[in-house]
Length: 248
Image 1 (cartoon, rainbow, N blue to C red):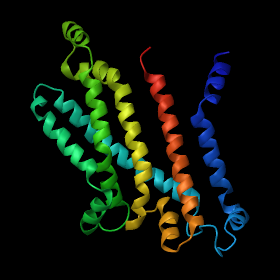
Image 2 (cartoon, one colour; image 1 turned 60 degrees about the vertical axis):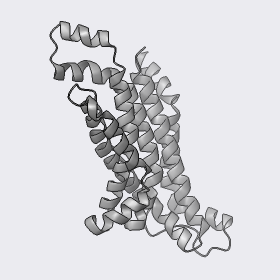
Image 3 (cartoon, rainbow, N blue to C red; image 1 turned 90 degrees about the horizontal axis):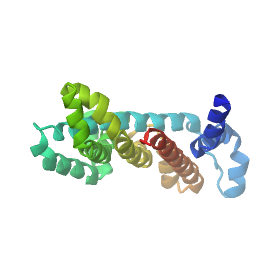
Image 4 (cartoon, one colour; image 1 turned 90 degrees about the vertical axis):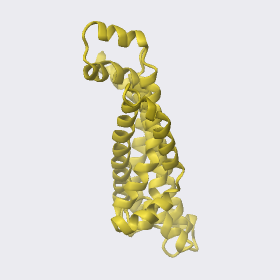
């Protein structure tokens, strides 16, 4: 019965259905030329073929995953620092720097990164990581700052060392807030990662940029639809994860 219950709960998750739809579309993409030829009859090449959509989606997800991981390490690390006694005075400065990083246009970061890092995934990762730090930092700070003082006092009373208290009490209680910040960062990065193709990074932005430069709306539609579907799938996945870890 437990296995049946788990299966029924899993099937109710929109993220699973969206992921299945995404997988189906990627598998069917090589055979969709007649469909796009019907939608765009004046286009002699209605389907993007420079790279498979599976490879583009995988590369796009790698960019998002690596950049979000870098941003999470930095953001959570800074949140821990500014919620300790030794770092509280740096809270306004850290928030201001992170806010400037997010408001700085990713295209400008790419332009500045290319001379240092060259073309490819590296400048895209730099821009995406910088762009994702603020929501993760704010989520982690909110979670850590809202740990009840009574819980901290009780942990200290039973002899918890500061590091053990952070790992076993504070971070687990702050996890829903951290996940909320990570969710925002990942969704932002899924959309922003498309511009990485402008500096040679492989992503779902490749058909979009080629479609724009060649006045081919079919390519723009193909890349844009997959980016949107990927973002919605990730959002629903994080929603399910947040619900699972939220204290009851």
